[in-house]
Image 1 (cartoon, rainbow, N blue to C red):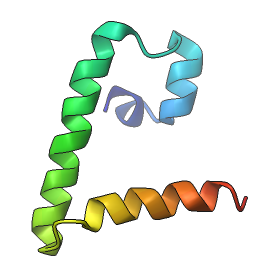
Image 2 (image 1 turned 90 degrees about the horizontal axis):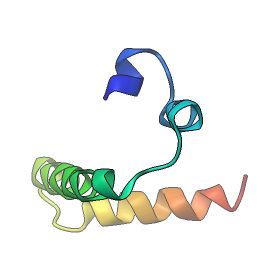
Image 3 (image 1 turned 90 degrees about the vertical axis):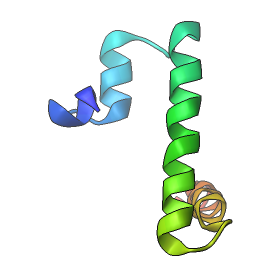
Image 4 (image 1 turned 120 degrees about the horizontal axis):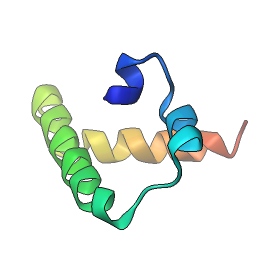
Length: 63
């Protein structure tokens, strides 16, 4: 969120401040889970977020 607020992409933020630390992983995982749950509720589809991420990851190989 801080990266977005300062106009940096998450990748540039990480490049500037280093890789994810062990202390950051649990909050990051919890945030990702809650965001996915929220997306699923908005779309009224319990698997929408999983498909969204799977499709995005599959496309990264195409680029």
